Image (cartoon, rainbow, N blue to C red; front, side, top):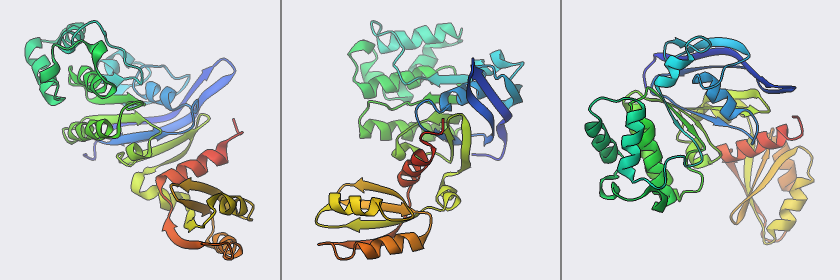
Length: 307
């Protein structure tokens, strides 16, 4: 990742009739960064990304992407973007190789055979090059979709819920490849709900109902939000959860396996709540750092019903 800013937009707003889908969003993204967008369904994540990348014209706002004006040069921006949607959108009755050749011809690429071979090699698809896309598992379809996105060597990669429905190993392999692209200077914008994907991002923007609530480097988000947390256990976790949810100042009680993660904005509120539960059989509590998942759940709860 370099210090060169490749996305610099201000006040982006998009309306669909009476609905304001995105309101006054601004961001700066350096070249080679992986930038994540989190938020509830319908919060405006995808709309924001599409405006930044020239795929959707904003009703207000301005800025540049890849050196081009987002209002006047959308066609130039789109030429340099790879867009991977949540739904597999390639031809299932064509083979992997045939799909890549078809996409390459759409871009009128020179030296197409070499580019297809490189795409197959980069994503580990050589052994399945003749296999019909419709017979692939979710993880292999994901690899093919990414290969198709990158065959024209874009400078900007747009990923919209890219690993929905694939297994954890396939997700990890996918992100290893995204990191390799980032190291070569490809900038990535990704919309996701998976916390193990969010931690792969260099920066995260949290969007709720069209408004950006957080925009910060991933490592700084816990301190930015200021959420405090405790790990709590008891013989009867359900009873403990019900008790703690009724305690003053407690913002979040979430079950993580055989323990509860309890969050509040102050240590004092947590200490008081833990003290009231001390007599429950098997009770124990330890201080922990609030992670991205707790923070995400907390922000979701804070914004529910505010649409």
